[in-house]
Image 1 (cartoon, rainbow, N blue to C red):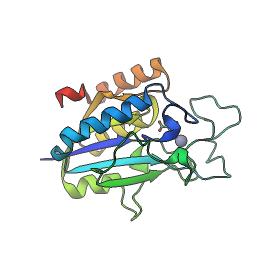
Image 2: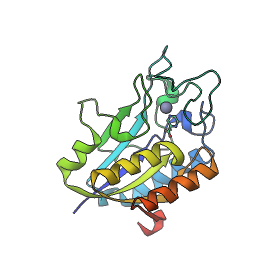
Image 3: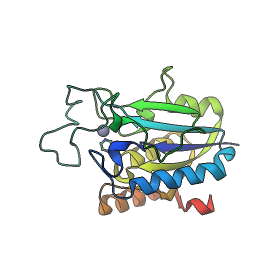
Length: 193
Ligand code: VGL
Ligand code: ZN
């Protein structure tokens, strides 16, 4: 049975000091690196995504001067900028597929993105015969939520590694985890993975 690890948006703009910093983002980046050092061999596919928005565009209303932090946001993860790069605390050597999403439009799920070769996450999982996926990254209440829901919809068994995610806001993050459980995901600590 093939397994996948989905590493969502561990980028400079979502970690401490970034344009849309998530509290605990640096710690999540470092903890995913530690987890990968011990467990990368257990995954046939390791997909990392990056939010990758257009410069000089509001990206379909995703950027706003007065953001509501629900549907609109300060400028973040502009393609080619340092903010869009992986946080250096995340060691990406074991990543098998790099996906970008959000060019010119909001795209919370990594399933909306594609590799430089144009492969989607769904196609990668199907081609590898992946039946189960573990999910980690940022932010719990937005891109982790959307990516995990899409993984469930794709038909794979999903586990959220709860110590390897962090959210923008506590209540929506708790609600997102509850929603994922309702949708069929399992919540586990990475030490139990
Ligand atoms: C994200 C807000 C805006 C995320 C992306 O990666 O969770 N959040 N764009
Ligand atoms: Zn974004």
